[in-house]
Length: 339
Ligand code: ADP
Ligand code: MG
Image 1 (cartoon, rainbow, N blue to C red):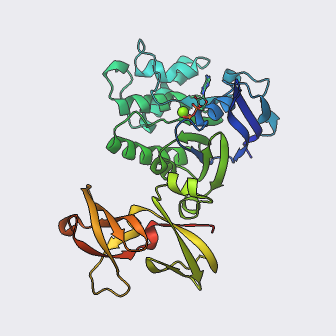
Image 2 (cartoon, helix red, strand yellow):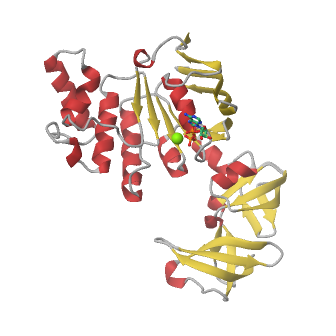
Image 3 (cartoon, rainbow, N blue to C red):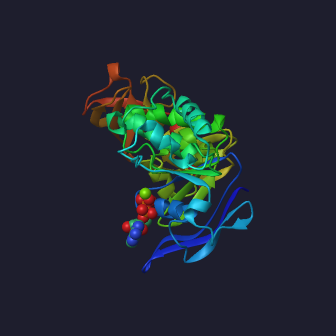
């Protein structure tokens, strides 16, 4: 393992902002630390960077304890929510900042290479104040990558950008990290961002790591209700699995990987779709509320014996509040939880 965090605890007075965390990142792996605001993600990242002194535990790189290694000697790159660029330097001056030790010619070659990598070729002489938010974050990324850091630490790097740009930059960043084989720890509260970028996701709640796994596994099999709700499940219902079929009050659905026995289903809005009344197994319900989204209408429906649930309908044929509706389960919107 490249990075090995063991029993790490960071305190602010009586508060353990990070409590007894074990975490490892392999060479070239991108790990996303995902959790709600205030759960201790930035504190953990800062302790890895050397900006926070742990009360207990260790941070090791390639088996060497970093306790006595100061921030600038760890050779880790840092990118924060707002790029923290130097306003009085141009783009090239910012990117070259981490290359002070190198010869001038090598430096400008490396700057050009980095700007090309982040899709800003030719931006060397541009003033930082003339860049858009997305461009500034690309420059911050180029600056962090320029000295070839052993580990890239990213703290909510896209959170200050608007939604469409964030989605695009997340895809670009994922591609760039893979192409450069960068080992990275990404902190985010946004599950879309975590799942777009990461090889593995570590979910953090109230200072503790509560689940670590591949993005698809964490998404489909959160280990408890709190994580399921954080990952978008708005309703949890009981179910029973037999031979790959889940039976619940909302009907049956095939889920081949489910083990036989009692379990719970976490339902995201996309777990229930409107269907025709004649569809086999359709569940009757009544529409309570309707909100139009870009790609579908989102309904709150009332199902007898189950209560209020979210569901989605095609924009063109979305039923109005008070109208009857028929629903079917979609396995894509379902998470499976232990009973
Ligand atoms: P996150 O990045 O997940 O939003 P943080 O790591 O910033 O969470 O904060 C975790 C907890 O530690 C919060 O309760 C926060 O108020 C507290 N905290 C963070 N930094 C400090 C500090 N410098 N002094 C005291 N408390 C802090
Ligand atoms: Mg934070």
